[in-house]
Amino acid sequence: MGEVINLNKFRKAKERAQKAGNAAQNRLTHGRSAAEKAQAKAQRDKQQRDLDNKRLLEGDDAMLDDSDDDKQPA
Image (tube, rainbow, N blue to C red):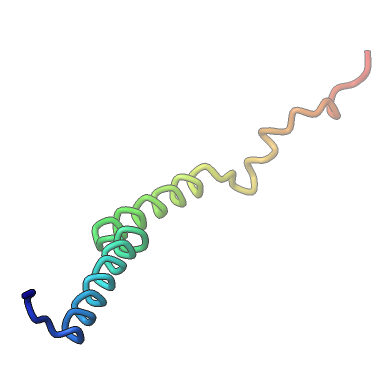
């Protein structure tokens, strides 16, 4: 004769194992460690600082004007 099992315990254990598998998959998909989040924030901040440093100041646009308005026709 076979082993006697409690079907309620079997069902609940199976359900717990399935939820644990789903949770592990969600952690891989959506979860990031604190270090990863901090690194991403530092990278975004650096990109923003680099962009801000490359902005032209208000008086600097005259130096970039390459139009020929000031030249007289020959």
